Length: 133
Length: 97
Image 1: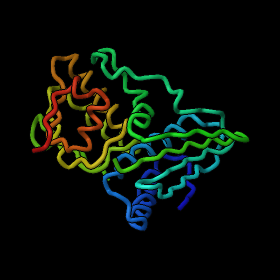
Image 2 (image 1 turned 135 degrees about the vertical axis):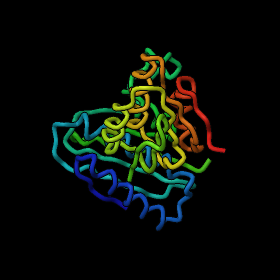
Image 3 (image 1 turned 120 degrees about the vertical axis):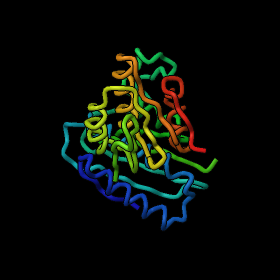
């Protein structure tokens, strides 16, 4: 299943509806739903916020993968950004040293079973797999 | 759908999905809170890093004045996110029974 989404946070509710549809059709494990929702939102919001050199839609693809789900988000005509290179977050830091930024991709890297990055012809594709544990 | 409002003085209820689209609304509401506050998250289904940022920003501001946020009725999914984020060491958290 795949669908394009505009570069707006207003699209988050439509992405949730798209994910609802995939989980219902694919008889997916509902235990994976939170991870999938969170990781899609964090990656999508990162693309919308930082890949400002394009107005192209973002493509989201979902496919069953063994005991779970494989999700890809592709941003077209943008600079390279491998989420695995995101700066680390010190979650043990005291309150006065904590800042709101940076947690999104940290959570993605922490929660998915695997993540893959592909950059070709200025198209940036992030794929993650969430499997039933 | 996300809703936030006062349940009683010093006690806030947040319900629904607190994502990046709803975070500005939550921040605007919590910016008006000026003393120690309990937030009942029993009806909160989902929170992303944008929502975590709202809680962290508010907690830091209130702690500066001797108050803070206490998070109660936290479901297991959201508690997992709090633990991954280190929030269990920053906030007083009560998990839903």
